[in-house]
Image 1 (tube, helix red, strand yellow):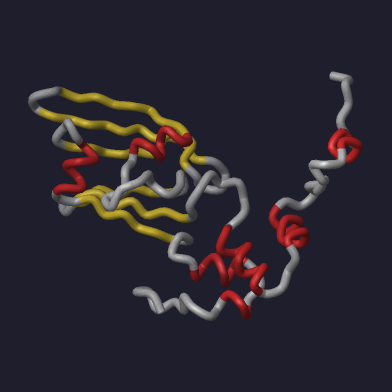
Image 2 (tube, one colour):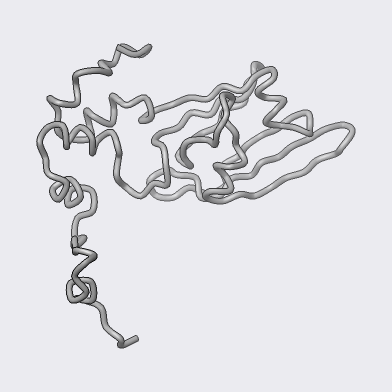
Length: 170
């Protein structure tokens, strides 16, 4: 079990579906806490920082965020960031980028807390869910059909199949 009481080993072989496999993943819901040195590092070279979501998509992912930094010596600065640049600008206390654009920041007297979901680009496939499905016996074709309904799988070594459905017409 992990710190939240979720079973972390031996479960994926018995489950099918994201509601279980993804929920059990430590990446499904996560929290990063910035205080002391980690908060100073995130704000550097300024003294303070705030992160404000400006626009979210229909699923709740941040499309644009405002990062405001302030210091008595340097004055104020702000950036409006999108997508990958947003993730790169918010470095996790343990290192690396913030895991996803699906997050909510909260500022308190003790520091900055960022709570989020997922890890990646938001393309729609939960890797832990896909692993759970594979370990439950689903074939890759069925897993891909689940995550990408309507997509057509084609062999890369078959030029006719690759061109099927494409046209030179604008």
